[in-house]
Image (cartoon, rainbow, N blue to C red; front, side, top):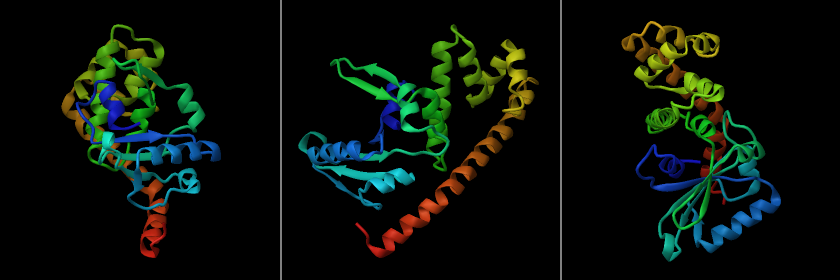
Length: 227
């Protein structure tokens, strides 16, 4: 669900860690703990690895010490701002088969974009690259779902201008959901840039408000040394 997924989608060249989204029920959590044990991984930050924290929306953070994955960091989540529950995410997943025949299950591009709308500076260039890659790979097959996705999420001014010029009716139908589309119709990149920044700033603030109670709980755990 993180940088590794972006790499596999062709929108990044490397990632320093592995981010996973898992089903947070009792049985699956035990399987997770077994996998963490196999990787000889330790919990490296609050909260401690308890199911209840996953269910609240916290991430669990681990560092691996198995010789095959020495120092690999793994972050695990189950509940995220703006995303559906795990079962719906799983039904929309993308499966990619690697050269060795191993299959990797990824968040769909749309879900990955939503998951990346955070306060972190590094996530916004990644959203832009994800959308550019998806559009350029599929622009010759613009089905209605893809058109809606692109018009609502593309963050590259020139591509957005190109889209609304080619699909004005579809763009007009989505103006109430993304008001800057009306500005894109003026085909002026300089007008779009501040609106895209405003859109990003508003999303960052929504993410900050979502995380505020979770952040306060983490601060409490740190100060009380809970494990």
